[in-house]
Image (cartoon, rainbow, N blue to C red; front, side, top):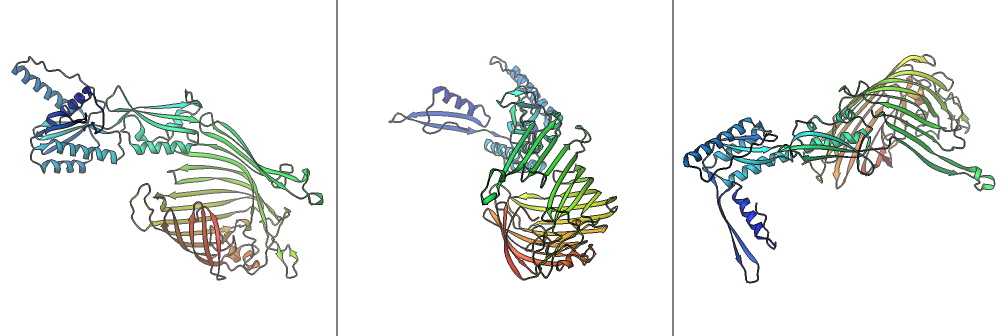
Length: 624
């Protein structure tokens, strides 16, 4: 409690203030400050005191006196008679009791009350030192629970046996939202205030006690909106209400409109083998975004990608999307978002891949273009339900971009044959279809010192509507279950080591009805069965994948061992054209190996159990 420090230089007024502070704090009956001059001109200060003591107590009460009206204290006249002094003290006692009875209950839980009672009952007379210890205990609980603006303002006796602690807890008296321009000046924002308020935790509203975790959650939610380049939550004392806080949320908005061009230049040989101006191919991506339309967080996004802007029709890729959050209204607590998009894409089909004993098979590319509309309902930040409609045109092409109705094979003579399995349902190389799609994700995972633990379940359903080429009617369903099991309890906190984790993963996929080859389930690859190429194990109507991975923390990363198995459940023969059999794949396979996480990269050594050979792989992202 003493602010004087050796080596400091102080004035007489500062010494006097120090003495008054100690004498009026209520902890001491008597305080003396004595100074003695040393031969070298410095002073030695001695503070002697006698602690205050009170009679024993067996009751404890803690009340929140924040925001209570402050009555002006009645000063005692030194010329009062003994009777007037007695009446004065009686009136002071009544005023104190009335103040305590009108105060609100505090947040201090029953277990802490019991701890304090044990401390009081374990003593005879209550000393100032014990009161200080109790005060530290009370404030420690508040700060440990995130109420960092709470503090003990006073303590005393209400009755002869009851100790009362008066606290202010940091009640929020006002929530202020302010927008700032590029220069930091307060300005009028584009975003509607209800958009922001619905993202704020209820604990951050007026009438609640400010908790540091609620403030952090508010920052996370504001960041997730993606509307602001800078955002702050600043509490400050309310000068009109003792113990009250005004919470200011300061925001700086992104520009509503933005565009970006990224280019890639491919130089190809011209006449004579030298590049000429005509042979320089400029490629890249043009993207634009118009965010926060009408201040309601709606947005339009688009991108166009090609490897040659001078002749973009060869490989032009595009995606345009409209996002409409708060579908049921800003004030409706139901959190649904509508999305509509038109797109095209090109991917290498893993269905037409040769097995380990087959020479390289000419690739088949699958182009998809169409429109998609869906509604996403967020149950929690990680769990959601999405349902919608997809209409698309699918085109199968060879490596020369020609339409390919059938897969290709390499004949024993070395010639390429085009009599492989059909690539589309219609048999023409082009399919059109419409289907309904739904996906429900239940994700209860969390991070413990950087390691993910918990469980995640995903169920997806695609239902053909009988609209399109050959009136496709099908039901395609998938279920994925993943468990991240924490094997050891650890202390959580910054810099603490993560726990070892066992990952158990299962994935089932099945399809009944019309199944085009490009929608068949494939086995093998970095996100199926590691150690194999994409689709190397087979393509099937039904598949089952099982995996286990043990993660052991090492310094700032983790090493892991894994084992995986994939099986077509005998359904490869039910895919039209039997691509698994044609390309000599076995339909089932296992792998095992070890790996280490290096930032966002996974370095793995995996053994292909079918061939018994191993290889090193570098993969980006997470397997599960």
